[in-house]
Image 1 (tube, rainbow, N blue to C red):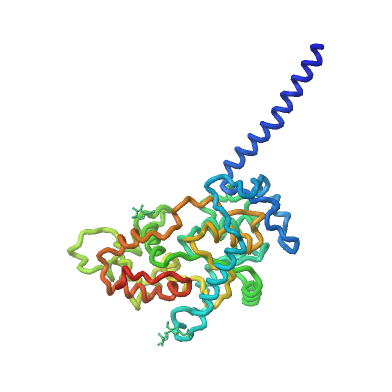
Image 2: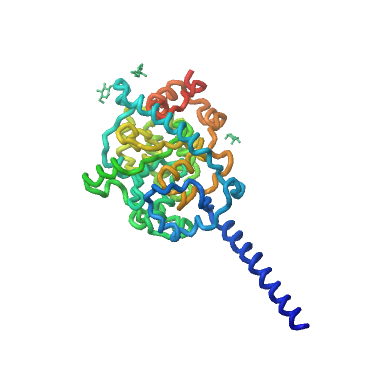
Length: 364
Ligand SMILES: *[C@@H]1O[C@H](CO)[C@@H](O)[C@H](O)[C@H]1NC(C)=O
Ligand SMILES: *[C@@H]1O[C@H](CO)[C@@H](O)[C@H](O)[C@H]1NC(C)=O
Ligand SMILES: *[C@@H]1O[C@H](CO)[C@@H](O)[C@H](O)[C@H]1NC(C)=O
């Protein structure tokens, strides 16, 4: 009798551990992961030709919360068919302005090495991604690095390797021959992300000249003094040491800005136009995501690229992608209308191609 009770007790404990132990394990693993897996059953079409094997290599995607039951904080994917129409409308707008010959100078650009250097290649999943800093590009690069197979998970990519193209296994389009480039440009899925042009400049200014968190001393030590020397008014009597947004605006809006640009090399990627970075009218992109609606665009891009079962975009902190007019007003306060209008003239192509509203509150 006692033996039987003992046996039942032991079985009970084993059952208890099997149920709650594994549950606890999977929950804590999930909480540790930056990326949260997508439901297995969702949007899997048999016609897809993507490599399913890398699924297991990717670690995430296995522990899958039910649809509509994602941990809080994650982006809630919009209805894909609904978002599809938004994406298509954006492309129509883009194409209509691209084909307007009187806007040619603002919208077209030669496919130079500078542009081919901006575009990253994922051959395994046939994806091209044009890098536009200050819109969460590091996350996209990490996703592509993992998909290319250089690292098994996003968490295992050392921070210093993400942007080190010797080591990250993420080739640039410029590293391929002309025929290989043409093939990829005409057959691969192509995308990039944009945001309000002026807010983007504020973000670049803050990141490179005020905070400079990644220890890139050349912005403060070389580039800022060169801009100040050329563009600051009454420089000798003015004690302010660092670059001011006003100086930066004057440099960017100068029709002859290219003389300094050449001196600065590739660092200008943080403030040249999207037209100059990604040639949106010369390359037929499939999706142009908007930072302001990244919660919808990120899952849409993953789905359209056929990689939504392999990866998902990390949780986007609420509010950070929203356009903040107060911030824009504050930065432009005291900058002359003439300088703002010149800046707008330079970035006009980016405003119209991607449907960003003319900032009348700064210009009129
Ligand atoms: C082209 O753009 C110009 C300037 O914005 C505009 O006046 C003109 O109507 C456009 N042409 C077409 C065909 O849309
Ligand atoms: C476009 O650029 C070319 C060469 O830079 C220049 O000659 C032409 O006047 C420009 N056209 C417009 C409409 O700005
Ligand atoms: C907008 O920017 C201002 C000024 O930088 C800041 O005080 C405010 O908190 C921001 N608003 C939001 C919603 O982030």
